[in-house]
Length: 221
Image 1 (cartoon, rainbow, N blue to C red):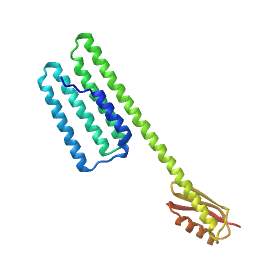
Image 2: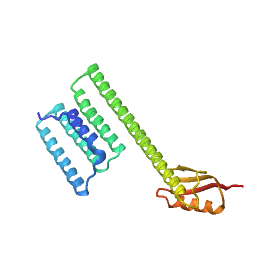
Image 3: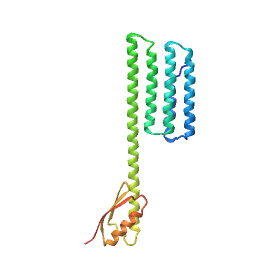
Image 4: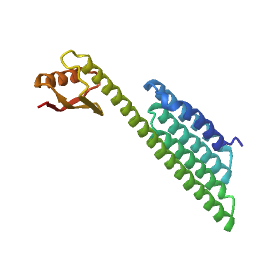
């Protein structure tokens, strides 16, 4: 009997996936070719089950379907990389293992079969829980990186605006405070006249990365 070792298959896919998937994309032609290859491999695998009988045949078919399901999920992840796609690969693995485990349990009877089915269900739920936890962790890490990136960009913008204000001969003031949040610059402090206020605003608008300028400056009395 030509059996598929679902766990080994999925492990190999997962290792390759975890290293490369987030950096890969596929052309439409490559996607279609891979999709056709998966279908062809499934039909071939299923055909090998034809010579088997009873539960051995059911197990063989479940293994073939499991391989196809995981391969499709992995293909989608390569085609459109995302945290959700990675999650779907993990879920596909869990469901493929569960489908095969259920068929194997049919070889048992009575309390042994009940215990086998319960263990298979528990393994499925545990794997899905782990997959969900990993998804949330991945999303959280991504959000943290995005937030850090925004803070770094804002710091750069603030530095550029301050330098430009100091370099301008009509201002050259250390009394203007510059604060940046998500590309929005706020200017505050005291200057000598309205002309300096207008010039400071103009300079801030000219800096790359500045989305909006809010004036909180006042003329000295």
